[in-house]
Image 1 (cartoon, rainbow, N blue to C red):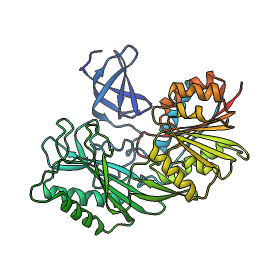
Image 2 (image 1 turned 90 degrees about the horizontal axis):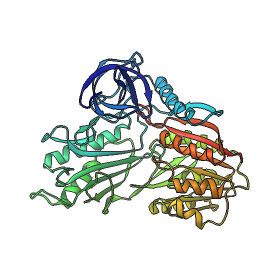
Image 3 (image 1 turned 30 degrees about the vertical axis):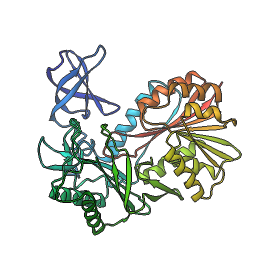
Image 4 (image 1 turned 90 degrees about the vertical axis):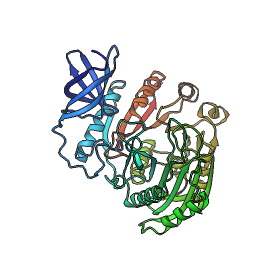
Length: 460
């Protein structure tokens, strides 16, 4: 098999995350963004001993499972969605099977409870980070999501279907205004330009909306001051006919070269820098950059499943590691003796403490720090630990401490990346934990992402 050579073949199976396996005479090739049953044309871009990787060039024949009509006009070029041509029930089956295959490869004798669907298939996201750029080199200003397979090209998603229409109205208004002014976007290679990202968050339950425009400090319009331009943009947003309620409009400066949304300084142009959301009867204050599950209604399904796996909590001490803004901790606190949350992001810890006070919970304690170091400072030993780590999973040294030193009788692992989960489960089983139950929860319809909840019990 030669790197750079084009091949054709049928996708036989699908591996997480969304890698179609094509078997040709020269061996197996994994090609992203494909489906079982498709005949594809691809070019080999990585050659390895056991499995090579290819880049999709063209879909020659569609899969028999592609019986749904895409509801979004941007589907295809846009990198936001993958599964719009597949009926939702079939999407759930695909995701559940991918996770089960991974878990089966490292575990045996456990109960797989399948996959729970999202309460809403469309308009489910409560947060979107849109990027400024152009769809083709030197083309007109674009604002939206990255083109599939591209680091530079941006597709303007003015009719995105995984968000409510308020997002599309705010995006369109913003794009039209800054296009009219002729304002430049920040170019990733030269690090020159002004407009970088548009961050929109909207609560599903309260309808409150927070809008944040992220720019560099390189204002480049000699006819208008930056202050006046942003004032007019703010007024245009406030005049929009929205279903939700604008509670805050922000401006964040970011002069760092990395293409991520972060703040050197954030100014409030209108209202406040937070909004409120409700999950399972509790209220949460969420700031512009704080982590919160991006599907509010799906989060209720996820946390209900986690709470079910936790089981009887009366008179028990629970550790919530990687606790974020303390959502899980607070959902358990009402039925536990005490919950201690540990989170490395200080802003999230501050929010968690505020939320606990907001919900009148006095048996929650939140510690700011790296899980690896922070758990050494806690003298109490937990009866149960909830783990909700970032995508890369748990740091190996932290995993050692959790499984060797603390050794709680039960662990609940909430994972947003099944491959990281499978890797960590190998170690936990070696240390005496048995996987008892596994359930998937689909928080991201039309995409390849999936959450997984695992119950482990100490047997040694």
